[in-house]
Length: 80
Image (cartoon, rainbow, N blue to C red; front, side, top):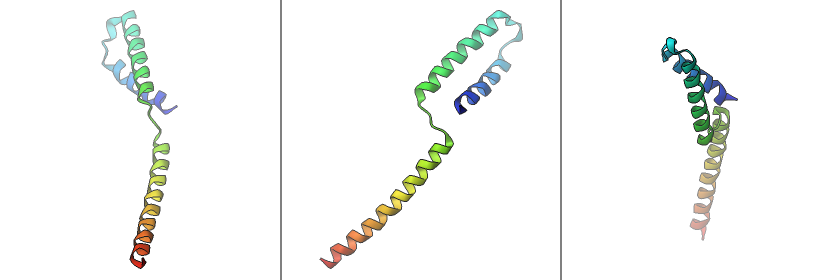
């Protein structure tokens, strides 16, 4: 899961900025932050880059087909 890898990198960044002398509190903070971030990412309903690129290609093909149909309609209107 890509969002899990992102979450792990983000948590590593956050952990580096937490003071080291917090002891047990540090683990509780990390756990709470991870839970909040995970919930937030889940609510965002993100898609992968691969899925985005596939949908972009579908849109480009659809746009090209639409332009071809618009030209065809214009030619038919001219004849009529």
